[in-house]
Amino acid sequence: MEPKLREYVEKLFSSAPKTKQAYELKEEIVCNVIERYHDLIEEGKAQGDAYNQAIAGIGDINELITALKGEPAYTEITYTDEQMATIKSRFSVFRGIAVALYILCVVPNILFGMIPSLETIGPTLMFLMISTATGLLIYGKMTQYFPVITDENEKSKINFTAITRAVAVGMYISCVTPCIALAETPLAAISPIFMFMMIAGATVLIIFSGRKSTYTKANDTMVENFKEWNSKKKSTSVLYRILVAILWVTTSFVYLYITFITGFSTATVTWIIFIIAVAVQNLMRSIFDYVEAEK
Image (cartoon, one colour):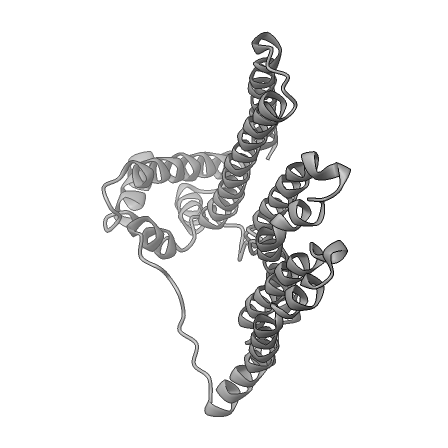
């Protein structure tokens, strides 16, 4: 019966691209369906019934085949003229406020520029107004379809994504404000640290601003189980790569700061920073591997 099960899966993948990923997925499904067949036989099922239940447990393979081909699978949604008018009206409110902030952002420079003791406040407020305006545009654009979305859970996900992305982009734009605001203070030498902390914080928000990648299974078939596992794996992989990037950017910044800003240039000491970074990266890799193995 095993050859028959393999033949059935081979037919399902007849239109799949001849790639390593498609081959590995096919072999995984073959192994799972054969294992399922033998489990059913041990439970006392007849060969015919066990065969039928095993192949029924595979599920719909078409969407996976489409994904393997790299073709987007989506359902086009159309809206009425009234709905489109509501959508555009919602976004126009955010756009109007954002444009007003862009135009007025030079006002703080003009007002505080005439007072020497407060001249750093003007550029700081200007960047904050620009970042706020940009954040409003991002939030308004991402939530413009709220009036026509009836699923409250979907609204909640979109709202979370829109807020975190808007805040993250705002932090990227205004990350120079610590350097400006602290330029004439005793903290001027360490102001780049605050700037970098804002960049790192914005990057973390970007990571978590993605729509929740956890896949909700439609049923308990092999295909749905694979989609859920693949979704978790991709999310973990992306998170690891971004955290590694943050780690090495931070390490480089700390090294340059200690060497050139503080004047502490003893090579045998400063290079320890990179050794520590390698150890941290290996620890992160071990943690991610452990989490992946426990899933």
